[in-house]
Image (cartoon, rainbow, N blue to C red; front, side, top):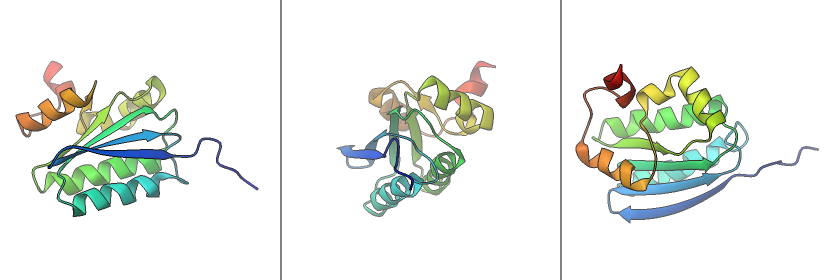
Length: 132
């Protein structure tokens, strides 16, 4: 009998018509990633093209969570949208760096930075590469 140690909670806010903020708390893993996927698909269906994922409350993310983030990035790229990861914990940031997700998907400090990045349009290169 397995009981979720850290069940997933997702709060959805729409700061403007084309953008959605998903505040995620709990482990984002094989058991919970489909819940995030459903929220992303629903918001895409409602015309959102900028997805801000506040994962400050996610202590653990496995490859299932990473795949959801990357899949969302690929889907919105075709409609000139973006995915922005807000304030990952050090452990999650390390996994994102090791897997290369942080090279593809911008990591930002807060909602304001995510919206500013979205409004700036597609970058020539990711912020990490621009500094190198």
